[in-house]
Image (cartoon, rainbow, N blue to C red; front, side, top):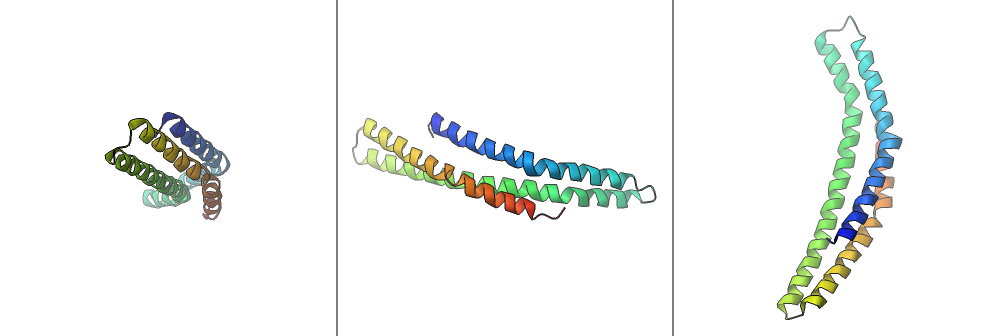
Length: 138
């Protein structure tokens, strides 16, 4: 993928992840640490009970991180498939005798279209992630 296209996708994804982290994940981290600290203050519990308590405190954050990771992986897979399709079209064009500048132009336009389409998916992906993050019981 051309550097400018890659930078555009990366910046948009980074902005989304930072927003999710700041507005959702960070709050969950705070709750997890408070919960874990309360587990450690239970002086009558056994080591195993404290450990289980701490594990329960970590569960919502682990679920949240899994949700975000899974969504980003699906996004990356879709974008990769799209760019591979562009690659195939370019290779077919070259094989049919097209000149390299024409193939390069086709590739650039095709990848640009993939990037546009996928960047336009980010707002709905963000909305879906926010809803899923908000639905995780604390």
